Length: 139
Image: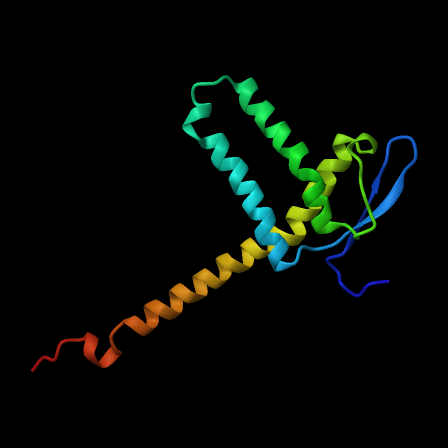
């Protein structure tokens, strides 16, 4: 049993169900996953897709997911654990995606927003003039 509260289990399988453990991403793996996602998004946003229909875009996204899913599973599963797409339902896949996002991105995004607000307060308070200088001297 692990003491890490970010470690989660999920049930996968169609005919026979088994439980797999989903681990949080290391910082290095989170950078790799973020790069994979941003690379796909950049290609979708690329102007070459502007001339193609929605089917081509969806086809590219599906192929990108299939191409990278094993790599992504490698980031969050035990080294010995494998999940084959043939044994995974769409609901199970989206549950895993939600876990990965919630554990690795949702809290981080919130923390970065909070840190950004604190930094703004710190920078603006240090950058302002002392109270004694703000008011003009009058006789």
